[in-house]
Length: 185
Picture 1: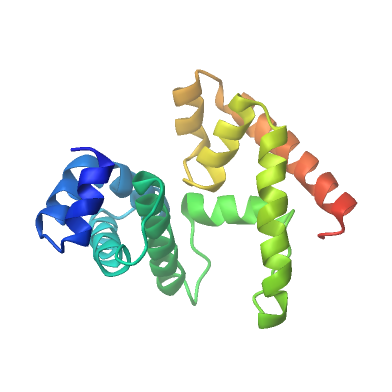
Picture 2: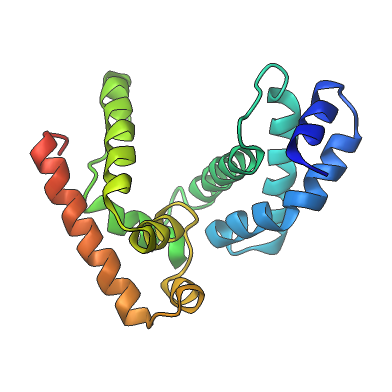
């Protein structure tokens, strides 16, 4: 079933919308969640929570790209669960490592006064991603959006893991330099 038909099912408040969403995007959402949580049960629960969030938000929202919308919902729900689970201890695994790597470039700022700066940062990131080659952009997004392990990225792209780590290091260095130029750091 195509995305337009699935969105129509959501608008009609048909239970079939969840079934079709799960059939088409279930493994995609599960992979995103599992990369963050590394726990089958928690990941499945987060995917179900993402379906519920889609059910509750699609009317009135009408996402242009359903897969991206579902991926974003799944990612945020999974990250929230990861943060709660690791509130009192530093968690291991790929999420902590990926967030730590990006932490070299981005300072922490969760105050309400930073809202405008966060919007500027999002615009900056979109511009920065456009400066990357397609391969660099894919590697960067796999690592920092989908939180894929470097070994998995290497396998997918046909590179050595060392090359992937080196590429990510160079991209982060360029990102840091670009952010300093823009006065965002």
